[in-house]
Length: 222
Image (cartoon, rainbow, N blue to C red; front, side, top):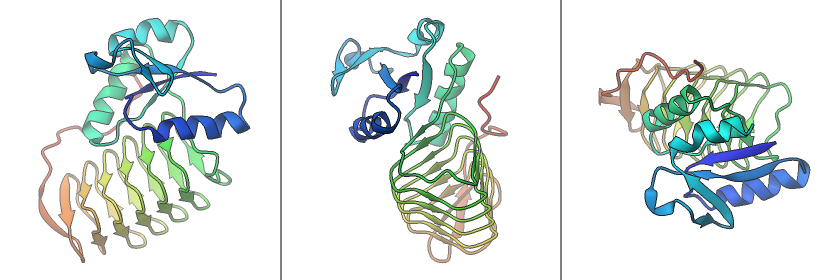
């Protein structure tokens, strides 16, 4: 399978590619697209950068699959992936082989780094990303276009809704619902449900304002 990555920025991508190729020899890192014109026509650690999102129809016609590596903003991640899908791109998962997928459920377009633990009956939607060393407890549901930073701990039976951004080292206690398009600050300890479109920080976490996002969900299939 040939894969094109969106966003030529993080060198960790190269290590993940190498790890996947060791267990899946048919995996081919075909190239990158990036909307920074200064990168077009160059190589990222030996892999070509074809151009920007305008290249999606041509690449899609050639049968490649796409993975979005953008994680700094769930809104940007959602908008870029939606644009790719609208232009005919088909998503695929980019999951480090160290992640145990047994008794879990996954959508497509997910980017999951090394050392992530997903316990039994975890359910992850589409276009979400979980970074290194995070723990997702049993029976937790992760929605679409979610970003979970490194070393986050989400306890069992939680519900993380579409578009949520969960910062580094945040802790979510059991059976808690995080509303859609909410932001959980780095190091926050969430002890109760968080309403949709909220920004929370601290220990225990408290709402400091509402987010300015207006999207109803984070779905990217058209």
